[in-house]
Image 1 (tube, one colour):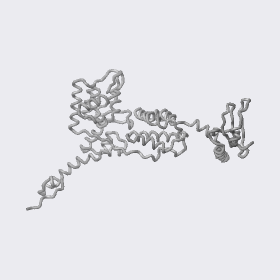
Image 2 (cartoon, one colour):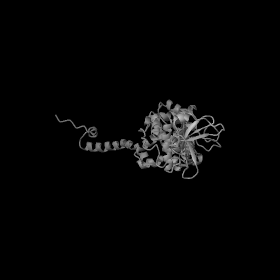
Image 3 (cartoon, helix red, strand yellow):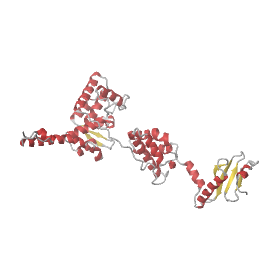
Image 4 (cartoon, one colour):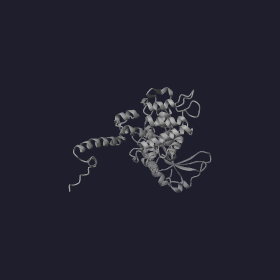
Length: 401
């Protein structure tokens, strides 16, 4: 067995009996070359793993790696064998390892479909199919590094909300990959990838804007330009502070006197108290025989699926082109705070599960507090012979002449 040099390897000829030719190096046992009958050659090692048997592992093609480069690689592989590792088995397992796309499919089928609500499932599927798979889908789950995740996140920096949502979905996928044994424990590559700052988009309707919206809905009702179910749904959103899904999924069997008994919502089953105005709106919505939903859709027995297109027409007609459906919920909360209701009470009415969610409306309480301060200080100022306006603004009275 000669030392495997370029001259020795170049002189090798394929066997004529159809079998592979093996030539082993005389200086490094277990290192050699294989030459197929077609003349294709590769470097390999031969070893006995701790589990028994004998394995051969090809690791580089002749002509791509030099003999010296191949010998250095073989030395590393054989050192791993001596430490009890099995490079051939590890390579086989790596080839069988799941890709990110396969992980995403399992995530959607085994976790999202079982544990998430349909609206959440749709958001997760969108993140996986539109943002994660095109970039990371072909990579092995074990190969994804924090730098790969950071690059994906950075690519969507122009839409920070979507970038952060995608990062959250990807983090959950890799957390489950650890549970399923597809990655090592505590190896989630999404950890410590900083999210982009998100500005809370809060838009509150003023009394004048509420008046314009109400007038527009009445016009749509009179001229028949919009369905009475669409008009009723928007009025309900404004009068109850409910989420869009809660109104669109509302069934007649869930309507009570003074309340809506929702069996399922974003925060689970809940009872939503409603006022007389909202009750009247519900009673005015036409019932469709055989349809269990309050806000019906075009197909028999279904609910309204798309309210965004009619909403865009209505808000444009009302001169409120940037108003979102969810802003009606914010406006309901704003009216409650301005009316002096406590934040815990508002959180209970809106169905918030976390105090922080309701706390975003805390600054709105400044207006009624300021009005109270004006009344108190104005009364005291009058008793003291001061100008109430100066007392409020803090402007000192002029010096006497």
